[in-house]
Amino acid sequence: MIADLNYLKTMSGGDSKFIREMIELFREQIEEYNVVMPDLLRRKEYDGLSRSAHKAKSSVAVMGMAELADLLKDLESLAREGKEVERYEAMVSEFLQQSRMALEELDNTPI
Image (tube, rainbow, N blue to C red; front, side):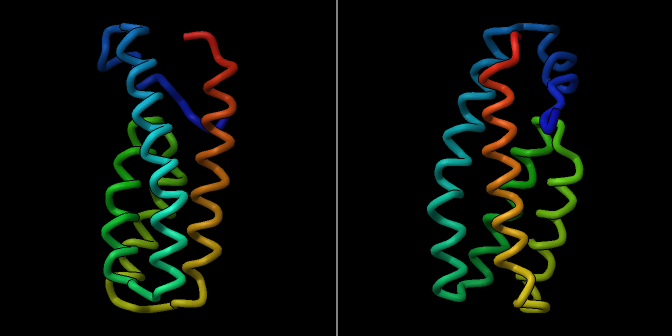
């Protein structure tokens, strides 16, 4: 499983309504990032991409996606400094793909 809801379960005391609300918020954020991040890439607005990666990092961390949070931390840092630009597209694609897969899994996971 890509997402790990243990953090949410612990912090909410197992409140399934709260967990479902957090998943729905995550879904809305991913839909936004799916539009915004490729657009920032296309326009080569790397400072904005860095800020988006920073915000997205928190979202995936709450969902227990530590490896993806690390990838976004790297993207945030690289984009802020304008380094290794050739890696950004693959990093954004990986983030969006993993997030969509996590949402599909979450849709099929009893809470």
